Amino acid sequence: MAHKHKILAFESSRFQRACPDIVVDRFTNLPDDVAHHILSLLSFRNIARVGCVSKKCREFYQCIPNLDFDSTAYAHSTQARLRLLSCLDRFLFQRGEKKIQSFRIRWFFEGSASNGNEQFRVMSWIHYAVRCNVENLNLELSVYELLRTLELPSCIFLCESLRHLVVDVLNAGGKILKTPSFACSSNLQSLKLKNVTIEEGFCKWISWCCKCIKQLWLEHIRKTETISIQNSSLESFSLVGDYRLGFYDLHMLSVLNISGEKLGNIHIHWKTRIRGINYLNIYAPNLKDLTLIGIFMNQLYLGKLLRLEKSILYPIGLHDFDKAFEVLSSVSRGKILALIGDIIKVVFRQGSLPPPLHDICCFSMLGTLNDDLVPPMALLLKAMPNLIRLRISNAVIPFNSSTNSSGFNISYWKSQNLTFVHHLEDVSIPIFNGDNEVEFAAYLLENARNLKKMVIYHSGQHHSTAIKWLQKKSFCYSTAKVIFMEKSSS
Image (tube, rainbow, N blue to C red; front, side, top):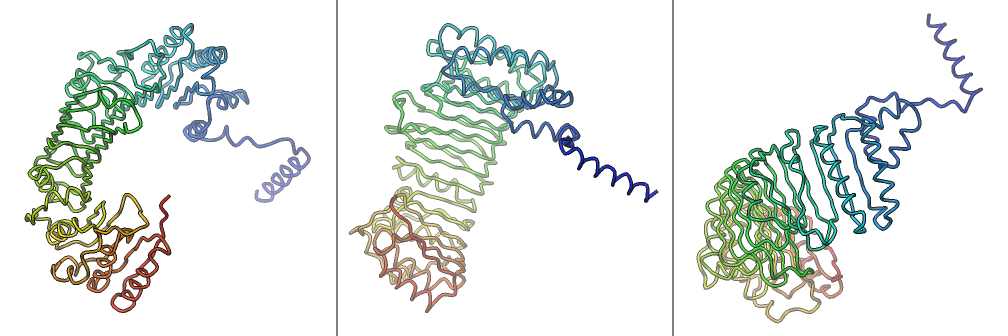
C-alpha cells in the first residue's frame, strides 16, 4: 500500500510539472469563517471581483457577514454614485436575508437632485440590516445642508440583535439627532455619537430605555448645553470635545451630570477656547478609572470614590481652594495619580495640610518646578510615603532658564525629610526650566537608595553643564540606570 501511494504521488507531481497552468485553489477549501475574515479585509469592489472567480467564491461573496458600503471614492460624481447604489442594491437582493454581524455605511450625500432618493435607499439598507439581525451598526453619514435633523429608522432602536451602534454625522457643525420614541426599549450595549447635537430627551432615552448599555461615548457633541444621564447598567462613559479650532464656543456644554452605580471608567477630555463646563456632578461610587482634562469651573463634585485605582486630573480654571481640596480628597484612595501643577498650588496655598495619600504608589505631575510650585510640591510628596514611581513632565520646552526657577537646592529637599525617597524605584524628570529641576534630580540620585532607573530629559548643549554634574552624582551615589534623553522644541 505504501508503494502504491508513492507511485500516485510521483504521477501527481509529474502531471503538475507537465501542466504548470493548473493551480491548486486553496482559498475555496478554507473554512467559511476563515474565508469571510479574509474577505472582510478587502474593499467591497474587490470582494465583488472575488465573487466572479468561481461558484464557491460567489457563495463566500454572498454570505459574508461583515459589510462595508463606502461612497468616499464617489463623493463628487453623482452618476458614479448612482451606479454604486444600484450595484449595492442588487448585491443585497442576491444575498437574501443571511445574518449580518457587522455593517458599516459611510455615505456622502452630494447634489440636491438625488439626495431624497439616496437617503431613501441608504435607509432601506438599515432596514435590511435589522431584518438580518445585525449586531454591529456603524453609520457615518454626510447629511446635506438643508436637513437640520437626522432621523434614524425606529427599527434600529427596536432591533433585538443590535449590540453596538455608532452614529457620526460627518458635516461640520453636526445635525440634531432626533430622540427615539420612549417606547423603543433597546438592547444596545455600546453607543457612540459623534458630531451631533443631542436634545435633553435623548439623554432621558439613554437613561430610561437602554437597560443593557455598558459603554457610552460622546465625541464633539455640538451646541448642547446640558447632558444628564443616570443609568444603572452603564460601566464606561467618555466625553471628548476639542473646540479650540472651531466656532461653537457660544453654544457648548455647560452642565454635565453623570450617574451610575456600575460606572468603573469615566473619561472627560474637554478643551475650548473660551470657557469650559460650568457644572460637573459625578455619582459613581464604584469608579476605578477617572480622567478629567480641560476647562472646568469651580462647580465640580466627585463624591466619595472608595474603589478608585487611577485618576488623571488636569482641570484648568479650578481656582477655589475648597473645591480643589475636595477633588483631591475624592481621589486620595487611588494608587495612581496624575495632577496638573496649578491644582497643587491651589490645594497647598499658604502651607495647607494635604489629605492623606498613603495609597499612592505612582504619581505624575504636569508642570514646571518654578519657585512658586516647589513648596506645595514638597507638601504633596510628604503625604505620599509609599511612592515608588515619579513622573514630572512639561507641556513646553523653553531654551532659557526662568528667573523664578532657581530658588531651591539639594539642601532644601533634604530639610523636608521626605519618607517616599526610601521607596522610590523609578523617576522621569525634565531639566528644561532652570535649576530647581536639576537640584531635585540630584537630590534623588543622592538619597534614593532603592532607585533602579531615572530618565532625564534635556535639550542638548544648553544643559551640558547640568548633565555632567548629574552624571557625576549618579557615579558617586547611585546604582540606578540613568538615561539622558534629548528633546527638541519642535
